[in-house]
Image 1 (cartoon, one colour):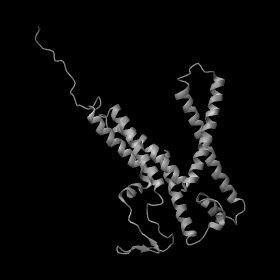
Image 2: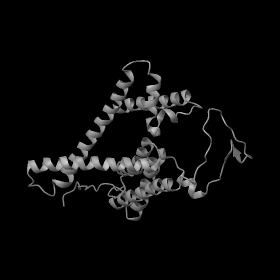
Image 3: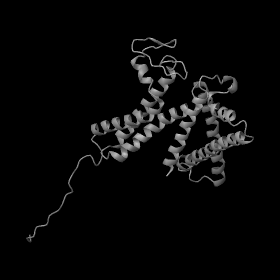
Image 4: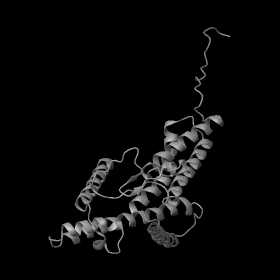
Length: 269
């Protein structure tokens, strides 16, 4: 039920980005942004377009931050609850309710501080918050998706293959993600940002003053889009998990055996 609404929200976000690009094309908005990062571009666009309507820009910003804060607060509470119920309470079943409540609040505070640290690290990366969030989610969520797909669609996979595939998928995703961050300055092609369509010829070595360098094989691997991290790690988990499962004998349903049927003789013994 949430999938159609999510697709509508994503489509509206993409349309908003296209409208922002068309409106501010070939314009220098650094003066309007000041010292803010590119993540403030949406707020700047709304304040610029709706500055003639009194109260509406402030209402938009208030709705934006209230939605973000409600999502973050529910995530902190969920993380604290899952940590308490799945990790702490099974180890300490005799813990009092008062101490459990205090520990749960401390866990929520700790996750909040961790979120602040991650936000600071995101600022150091230089990318937008959404891009970094999708990178992290792709590197972590992709192997989990592959593990679920391996268990649901391949009944001959066993626990050894699933564990090995999960570790391999997570390692591959971290390899690509961290490698793209480290080699970001040397990889890729830097082209000027303008509104004119530039179609370079096959023989040209420079477009608009920007020299195009042919990336190496490793840089091509690191230049994988962050939107494909999830799919890449998911496929890695499934392939490695199946290979290891076959090498270790497969799961309980790996061999298609007919059930043993006891036939009674019609003649008395």
